[in-house]
Image (cartoon, rainbow, N blue to C red; front, side):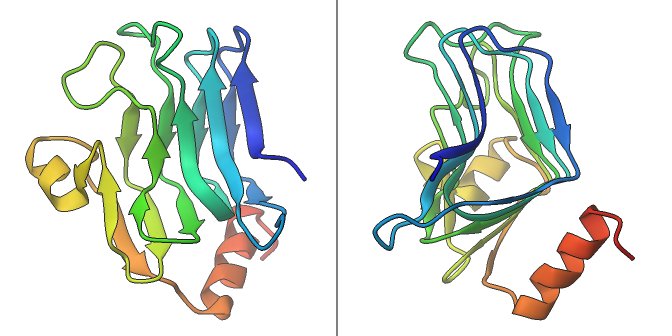
Length: 157
């Protein structure tokens, strides 16, 4: 069991992770950690056009170790994310207007009710402030929808 799909830390940079299906392993009936993790000097890592299934959060950006600088931020965009619960779909990111603002946009985030938060506020409020354009929270889709997306992303059709 891994707590993340991609662990970009200890200086990892310039990864362009795309068109994958990442499935978290379950442990004690809880979902996994983060599909993208970047901290301890990791920066400029881009996670996009992926299908992230059964994660606690889509991403974790470590700001405790000094954060990221403008022009060297990580990105989590144009992904499909299936969360175990409503609430924050990311953790630790630099919010709108902050140094090294995390690049987030265009994600589809599924949770039990589709009630998603970001930067300690509702997604709708955060978007009114100019953050995370195009991202939407939705209730869980059908299994057929998920399987069709997996086939499309992996170019199996």
